[in-house]
Length: 411
Figure (cartoon, rainbow, N blue to C red):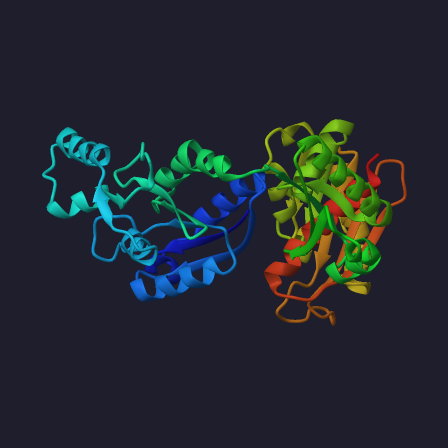
């Protein structure tokens, strides 16, 4: 079954609210094997809604609407659909009694236009609204199924799960589950990753693999369809194994995790303590870590050393180092990492120094970064980086690089 979701409401087009309903419906339809190829948003205009429905009928077996079932004149969804499929609206007594009971319970006078919410498409299956007044509807005409749901998520979501989804399942001859898994990568560009797995992408059928870029990271979504969830997961795992064999060095986690959360878990698991000296990042690194519960077990502390005075007086960076090499240098980063580790009594010290911009500093262009990691009993590792982008973007990606390099070195 192929479906299209049409969200109705001018407030969506104006950006006054976010269309979270489409995401919710897509996720739950995917679970039962319904393909979603199009999302449409249309304002409160009957003619434009008719045009959207006519187009959707050409490419979908099921059209799901959210919104436009309320009491006002601009709530036109059910009137428009009834007209298109050649039928009328009629009052649903259960819905009308429910609306009247609501107004009685709240001590309010029910205006005449509220009765409009009890109107449903004739001969449709009525979907009960347990959290509001306007019922939903499920109708079929000329081989196309129409499901009308209210717009408010607190009404739409339980209605769909409790009443709408079961009706869809009744119409499906074969239910295939769509399962997916998200793999997250850092330290490799989207184009480079795609090149590494190009032959895998070219031959994909089931499962499918979709690369996505986001906030300095690369995401791969592996999606498989099968009647058996176990077989779908087997197909996903097979694809994942093949991918990680090529680019596993840059893989750090699944689904909605973050690279900082994965680092926190690794530090806690290995019982490794850490401290940070942050010039460029201004506390962002420790802010990310300490925002995760339980980090007191491994975060010893840190210092924001934005000025040379603090670098020299608190973190004991040699005056000669700053005079000869500058604060934006591998030499300064090395001393910062080593000294903050000793000062805080941690096993690992990490430092960040560089130029976030917008202006150059000490002859270095924005995006010049030096990141150093000092480990007790080991030689300090320095990572010079060159980045482009905004001041905020450079600082955020620097923090992620710190997490990335730490994950790679902690066994």
